[in-house]
Length: 359
Ligand SMILES: *Cc1c(COP(=O)(O)O)cnc(C)c1O
Image (cartoon, rainbow, N blue to C red):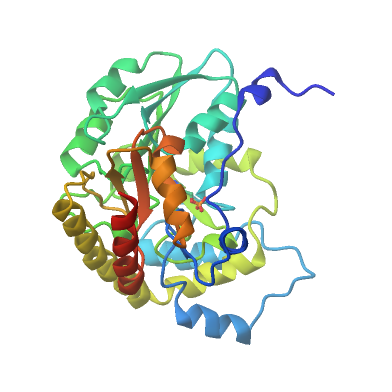
């Protein structure tokens, strides 16, 4: 049996090591996972309590249209119901976008490094990938515009960018959209939207009025703390949504994930607390880096990319032995660095102690 040629050239996603795996291997009791940018406070306690009281019916297919969640989000964001598409995480929407818009002979433009799934799915569709190196961790928007031609179908803007944490400000985004040709779909991946505190971070939803060629991606996996349930969404012009719906599996999100997302939206104070704690603990980690002459990229996400004087693979392996799972930069395309999710205050205190032993 032979797969498409491109399949052999792909590296399957390497997940952060699982907690149980590490516990067993190093005979540790406690493991702190700071590798995948999950919410260290779990999800809202309100979601957990309500969930147990009304567990969705598992024998019936889910509502493929996700009507209840759609209505809820529509009110929450002030966006029409027909502007949404839901996915099994925003990951699945990235896949749907590539399936819908890319094929051999076409190309797609993205930053480097950025979220690897854009490249992964574009490759599977046989499109040419044009990667534009980031400058100081920021998208080089002028150069990205330069790369666009009549065969370009998608440009990916990840803001805050994973793994650098840097963001595109309001002026930069508007300028980019005004200069970007209309035949190109601009994907604005805002997976860390809820964590951002910068004043000049743009509200992208109003831009849908003036620009029909954008789709905004958001997720319940990060600040909402529902990574394991797999639910994310896209917001775009109904025409784009209609195209995407053609490739979407009819029951691609589950009753459980839809219900959890609705409940999560009802507890905005949890999201605010998560954002505030994240900001405080991020500040402490930055201070730690400054105190120990470690460079980092300023981040508006819930993670920090820290530069080291030795291999990130090596340091992350040492940290594992102390019970901390972080992401080596080498796996993300940045040598001698690690990406660390901002954990709780106590976990970060302990992390700093262990980190000192690994430098
Ligand atoms: C985590 C992440 C996603 C994917 O999140 P899902 O769990 O699939 O919703 C998408 N984009 C970026 C930049 C991310 O960091």
